[in-house]
Length: 424
Image (cartoon, rainbow, N blue to C red; front, side, top):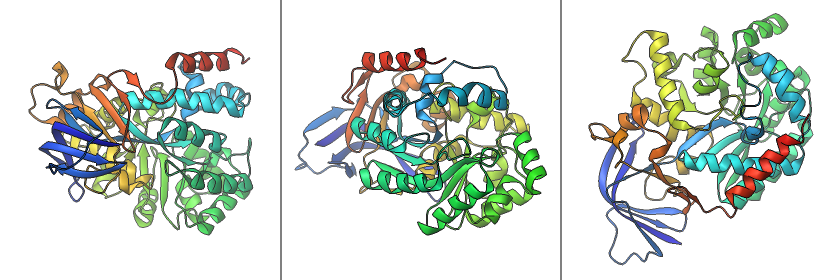
């Protein structure tokens, strides 16, 4: 399928300066590859032509940390501190999930991603092959990592999933990781470090999400979670951490030395009162950033517009500085930063030769006018209502409220309600 977009504004990414510029013209997609940007040869043969009517084509958002299938716990257990929420509400019900549940719950999450302009996600959850199958069947792009912990799984199963998912489809990949220091034995962490070294894989984990997590880790090991995992050899080939709120000076040094990503999750951190990540310091010290929603049980929505606003807004409050964490850095982290974090450099921007993972933003709505600064409009006033179209791998999966993923939305909603309905 070849697709031609005409009468478009097209957002191009300046990777060196983490900035953007907008050109006008057409964009041609040949199969799943962006073939021409700006000017399209007259002999380009399009199977489908989409008139953008002056709206914006931009890179899709990359949700760099989530637990998609936790859709079944959306608004089930809220207004609770993290440890109580996790151990007393989440874990007991997750233990009742079966493999087929993951498939249907993932599809529900994928639908929400598409409405938010998210073209790929970095998932951590159970039964990775089922997760990957859901993505492949929908035509969505998913990167996964392991949620291995003391409550289930093994290093051997992580290795098995690594090989299965990485060989399944161009739409699926797997990166080594584990849940968190506070849920995982040292023996298991050592095994994960060994896999990361064996496969030359980056390594990811929940890291320094709460003050209590860091305090108890220091009591156990005399080290922060970052120091401990670095000492175990997790980061020989890069990686990073999710949340990264309560970081020591030495943690920052390790992140810089290893080239690690801090994946911020401001919506979840706000709702669980975990704290405000030191975004300004990450930027000041040149530490790489990406943005994730976290799961729909702790957020509770999968909305990158809200994450972007909170990322900069909370930082401004924390630093008491309205000039810190500019919109351009936030949008870069939510698009190219996430792509690089997830090992998807071919999906990081709209350029000839890149994968056609892109979205159309409806500028012809009150919240996007006037067009004084389109980047700032997206970060500060944009919302999911502005997502007119989401294309993944050259296929339009969502357009103005309609899905083309091979499933009836009502069927997915019925399946999700049945899954949580049977649980005690």
